[in-house]
Amino acid sequence: HQDGNTMLNNDFAKPYPHYVQMAKEVAGMDSITLEGMVQLCMIRPMQSKPFAWDSRQLAALTAYTGVLQKKFIPVGAAVSNPCAARNPCASKNPCGMRNPCATYR
Image (cartoon, rainbow, N blue to C red; front, side, top):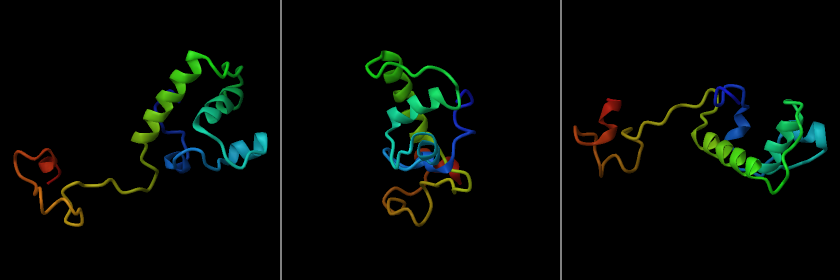
């Protein structure tokens, strides 16, 4: 995903392995690992050859995809505010000028 994550579905936020509709439709799989999903994306929709399972390329692309997944915000999800009153840490570490979350005010 050249742009980072704009073409990803909301279920990308779920930890792998999990159900992915494309994996079910293409390979009949009820659950797929992140590494398996990278391989499946290489075949479809990218129409390329998959990497060798023990290749550095697969390891690197899987690691990169894992980083994207951690940063991924599903469409329609609210962005969390660490200074929000509902945050249990807010009372212990209120938003002050030296607090990095003070910019959220």
